[in-house]
Length: 81
Image 1 (cartoon, rainbow, N blue to C red):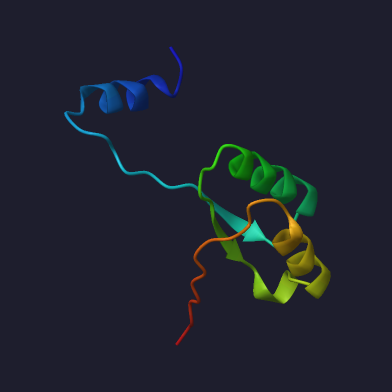
Image 2: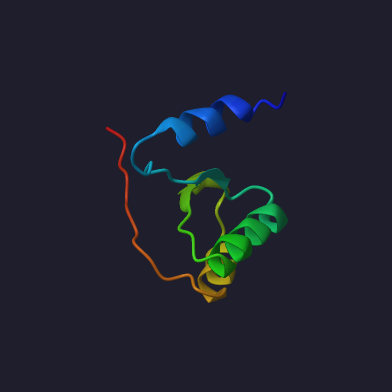
């Protein structure tokens, strides 16, 4: 039995499609892995929410991400109070 079996069973039992999203919470760290994830999701035409660690973000990282394939989409800005 796989850890994913209960998830598969729950999704199979649904009468309608489930809305899901994917999110990367560590943008600013481990650029190679994030780049690979961005490219994979772009190739599959699947949106990916990316949460950025502002203190660890550089201008070159932003330029690299924006220059990649199929990087257009919605942008949200969160503020802390």
